[in-house]
Image 1 (cartoon, helix red, strand yellow):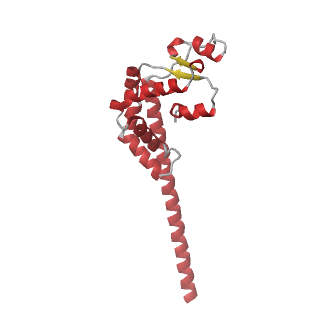
Image 2 (cartoon, helix red, strand yellow):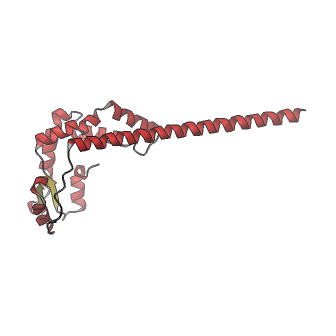
Image 3 (tube, rainbow, N blue to C red):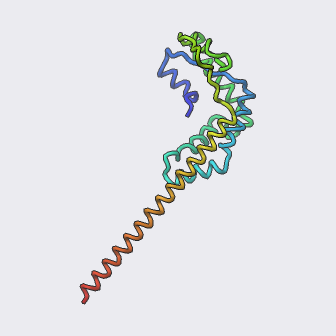
Length: 187
């Protein structure tokens, strides 16, 4: 869960903290989320993985309900209609909560200089500013995550089948043994 959803709580816990508000163009952000996370949120596959994860008591069983709850709270289950408003409200909320001297509004395209100046750190000369928030890369990670979840769920189903078969075999063997014992005692 992104820490941004807990701005008030984090500022209450760390009242003197410097805050970096990473800024993006709202239309580009909306398009990016529509083509990545929104696909997952409305996916039958993701819903199925979520239901199976819950039934199989998988460690990731909380992911799907958590994202559905976020979708409800942030966008009232209508990202296309409410996403941009939610985005702008978040920026306004952070700006209202953080004094100007402790707030840096930063876009990664600005490079290291403003970020390092704000934090009082030297500018790294040997590293470019990282930029990893690209639709194709995010979608590749989501596909990988889906496949890993499905593999883990398949393994869990096979484990359940193996334990069930073992339990059934042991029960049948025990039943046969008890039946034989009863026959011997009757003779």
